[in-house]
Length: 347
Image 1 (cartoon, rainbow, N blue to C red):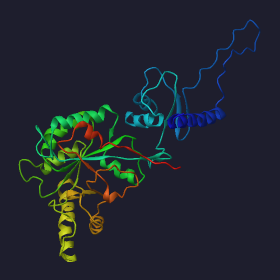
Image 2 (image 1 turned 90 degrees about the horizontal axis):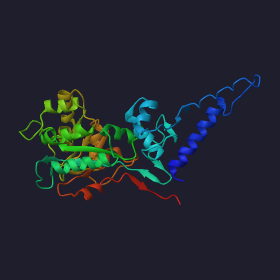
Image 3 (image 1 turned 60 degrees about the vertical axis):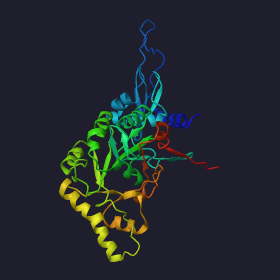
Image 4 (image 1 turned 45 degrees about the vertical axis):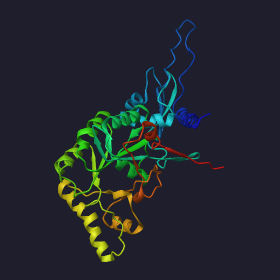
């Protein structure tokens, strides 16, 4: 029996037991208390659902999907992933018993066989044709996004990922985060229509010296409009320089430089977007412990490297991993960045 089936059976048994303790079972045979000639009383129909504080047990109708069940029982089709993940699959046969979780049941993403990983992908520039490593052809980007959509990956926001690291939010088993570095105008031209069409959120990390600096850079009004349409904008430093303390740099010099690199973007974010940045992407992915102290002092709650690895819920939030997507990657090489589970044996 699979883990999903075992959970399904255990949850259903517990709920059905509780339900039967409070609800008399419907008669399954005709009952007659009058003369022999009196028609038998028709049996009452079985209830459609049994419910506890944590779960609902119901029986699938013909054509039911996680989306239809989420709409009917949870009032939100966006919660369909909870039903699909708990049941272990997206399809149900008519009359099949389905356990529907009403709230998160595993916020840490950890069980006896291993733990959940969340890949965070980082893109830079897009173009009609690939150019160098960092300019990805829009056709390749479209192919990658279609692969995510068609293979059951669920793109979640960076904000939800940060909550996951605090055990404050359970994420879908095949959760992925999309990020874009620097602030290229090509995001608006090429990535935006693809992401909007698929309903995918994304975060743009901008270094403030580049914003509005030329025809290839997004402006603050454009970034503000993208935020209004559901995209996230976060900090990538002021100059995109290495944020680690340089050889020969005094503590006072380093403190002044970090004020410019980390605090000035906060002031600009407050002025241009009406809020401070909560996260930062380290230029070139470079960091050290001295930098992390400055990042915390700057009010950032999470920081991102470019280490090619997924993230467990217990990752250090200030050094979370991101996988860079390069223009020369085939689809098969792209898929290798989508590891969403790390098996571990407890034996």
